[in-house]
Image (tube, rainbow over all chains, first blue to last red; front, side, top):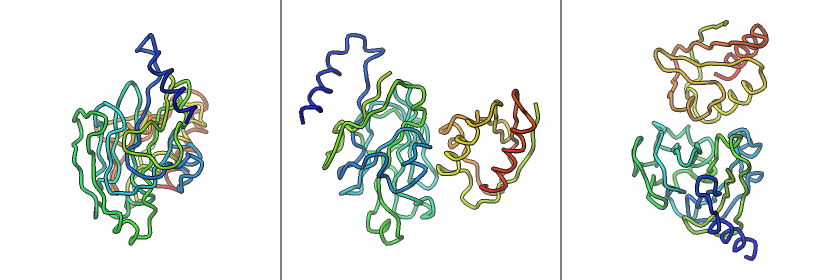
Length: 169
Length: 85
């Protein structure tokens, strides 16, 4: 994990916090999925902004960074956050909008300020699979065009909060 | 400025996927695009702002295009809404 350590070190060395890179933590426990491998083309092609996924090992979604909940879909499968000028979309599963909220429950409300690691929502992974949807927790920086770069910095198994995307401002 | 009104027929409304496709289309145009529903509005390039409008099936929205080749942009937006929403 030499690369990982290097990035962490660079982050800590940021002398100007205004411009320092922001690390986004894994929004769930599971297996890291690179943008190109996210099983939904609007995400894998970058149409929703730079993103990554987590193939979840448990049905819990956590805040990837300190920020504010800007919106929560009525169907509870998607959460929007604002943090450090980023607009972050956390979308649970592929085409799960069709589930109409069944199997999803929110632990945070729109307008609420949250800390990295706070529980945002829970989902029933068995129900998502039974509905024949991929359960991939997708995290996109929807305004990634406004930033210098958004880079994936993870691979393999990750714990909630582990650095997965590095956003250079 | 040119505009048209459209009533959403997709039963899921403008959720993440169509919002993303809409933004992609708007970015291809040389006009500024604004989506309105009643008092609420969002710029056509702002994905999260569009999603936050929570536009549902049967909602009437108006789409405004301003600057650039407005007629071409209007036609592209009409085609997008009719095909996707």
